[in-house]
Length: 164
Image (cartoon, rainbow, N blue to C red; front, side, top):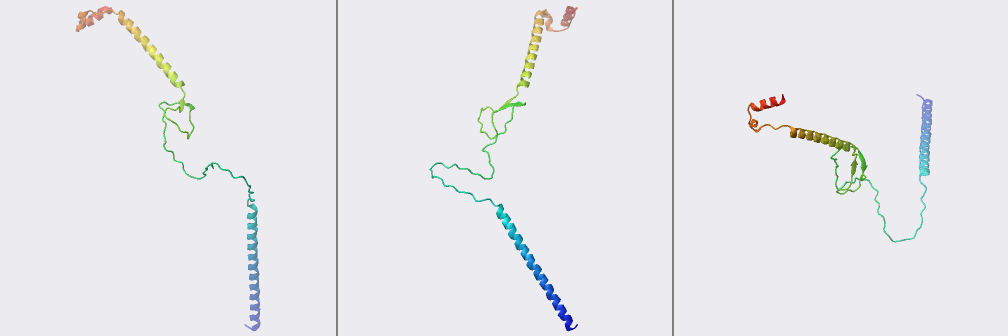
């Protein structure tokens, strides 16, 4: 290579270096501009400052309000199991209410049980009537002679002859 070739080669390298340097400067300027634009955008979205008022000083109770996350654990938990099953018609408490022994809690629909009670009363009346009929029949039935009570074939003979 000659002197001219070296001069051309060094000139093109310095030209490439300038282009890269200009490109880096432009990239840095773009990054700074983007950052400033996003900061201004966030500043514009921020809530306006709150106004502060002045009031008179008084003495009194300050209500305590605690607003926090957590778990409330009850002192005791009770599971209520009914002795009867059915549809609830009334509920005497709300979830979370304090209840005491003997307090009205719930009312179950009484209609199915009233129907069942009427059926049992009807069956009782029917059985009582049948018992009365059998008692009257037994009262009017002739008595067996005392000698035949002892047993043997005499009783069967007596019953056979009586029904003929």
